[in-house]
Amino acid sequence: LELTATVQLESTNHLNYTPIASKSCNVFTITSLNDFKRIYSLINPQLFNYRKHFLIVSINYLPPAHIEQIFNLMWQKFILNANLIAYDSQDRLAVSTFFPFKAHACNDTRPVIVNYFENGEFINNTDHLTTDKLSDLQECPLRVVTSFRSEPFVIIENVQNETQFSGRDINLIQTLAKSLNFRTKFIVLEEKGFLLENGSSEGIFKYLSNGSADLALNDLWITRVRKIFFD
Image 1 (spheres, helix red, strand yellow):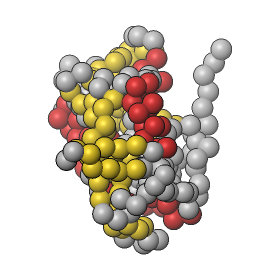
Image 2: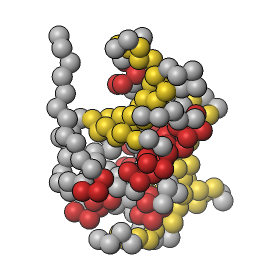
Image 3: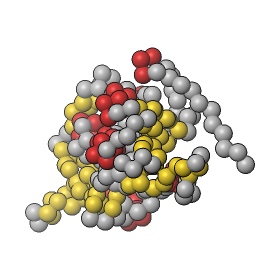
Image 4: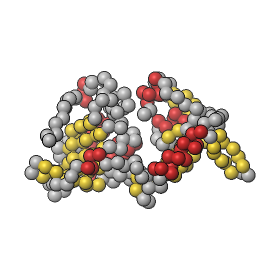
């Protein structure tokens, strides 16, 4: 069985602004960290499906600190399926990825070498390209932002000076937390806030867009504008 791929080459100077949700893998070729930062500025939900795979290929040697910065930037956009191919200090072509959910090391973006490419083939199997990084979150905390007046989805009560949460969405997040092994840290705001088409936001939308929260629970629904900025 031969592995084949259809490749569409696009320059960052003239990127094709069309929906590419059907693309299963995005490949970036770079020569330096600054190269990647230029590409990174173009990555947004309108152009790229964050759930698909991202492969970054460096023509030159990249120090581990630069690879970690690249993975850190990807993780800031919650892009998880990212691999990077570059020469290491011993002139070997190494394949790296990152695992943000580790016991006692949450949000870890340090590069982990998972394979080497020598003599036209990978040394190990290529399972690293499809590794499931979300089946066990190793009890890492997820920051959950919500607001008052979002019943029956989220009900917030003060019982003996202790904030207690209940409601439909709370039941859902508790079930997910048990299944995926993560903890929740709630952030409660006075108002739900808003999101405008130009990206301006307040409330829970601002918390999500600037990375202050990982997910939101509220009386929310899908809108055209929200689909532009959030997965």
